[in-house]
Length: 478
Image (tube, rainbow, N blue to C red; front, side, top):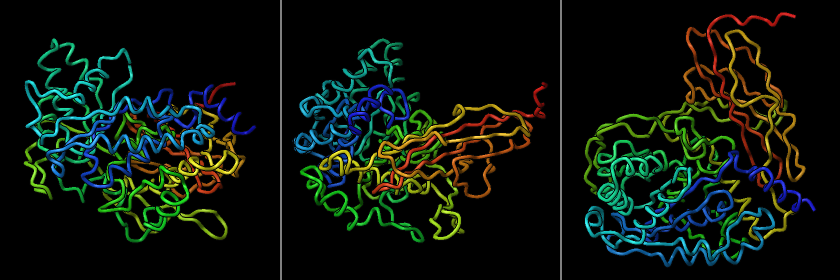
């Protein structure tokens, strides 16, 4: 009965796992078979196909796979998904049927980089991107590029040369691109040729310094258990059905491509249109970086002609469990850099992945499902300096009836007010604050994290954005 009620609630509330009113549209460009991490990322993505509208999966080339494409490898994974979908439907009614996904598997030209861009170089992949852009759909179209970007480059080339300027600008404005660094020579051409295109990237091919590489980076001083081979074997590969069995052993780094779409998961934290706010996929700033240093593949680099969404810095002190007294405490060590913007959430999104792998084989009562945070106030609040702020999440619920834990913390980097409003870790369902004294309008972000006590432990969030106005707060006259 419980799983039936959950399914009904998902439909009525436009699927509360989203934390947003619409599913994001996504097309993936992948050099699958260049290395095993694309296969790993596709397996995770298929488990989120109930809340991400997968609009295309296009096999492409890259600097590591220059002369062939492998759409059949995507088909193979979808057929494994077909076998576990009946059980997935017990946990969410929105999982698409495998045949509809197979119709969205396409391929680019089996040539490298800009050799595949120009007159007469269309492919079913580039044509599919244009077809999706032409749909009467107001949602942005996200293109996540896990390998080379020349199939996207060809679609943009054709749009520019076959559509009136105003129509071309309208189509380009619908695109949101996240590229896992540069893996052919077309990325820089795209950014310089289409200056208004929304584009997230750590330019060049210095993969080890890029934000996305934090998904699989070993970080000294913290627990790295959830990216260990032992954890992967236990929670993903073994005993989780035919889809988990296809998850390959890590070759270079686990799932380097996954950060490109993690922000599209509606967890209440990530807001895809605002990369500067941060979330499971990391945090990025709009800036104009200089020419990147030569990297590992020899891709030509050049100066960026305009601002792009790229690496930025978080200063992060981890929250640690405390055995006695207050349930959690703040670490005495602070980590700084672009990678903490992503790995700070790593245990949460790894546990979320593990829970969905359980959905492949377990009935609803034997698996865990994420909690539903609820606030007593709107998520955007305007206050004046000195005004009392009272937040309460006591109405939060859990579909499995699990005990809930509450954690409030400031995210200073996400707003204009760079000072933390919460000085110590707050682990109660209520939070009381006094708005700071400001001399101009400021914004400050507070994150509520609600975690259940299931196995694996799952978290969802609320982001409270305070707009703080200068001037004294005047009490209401009675």
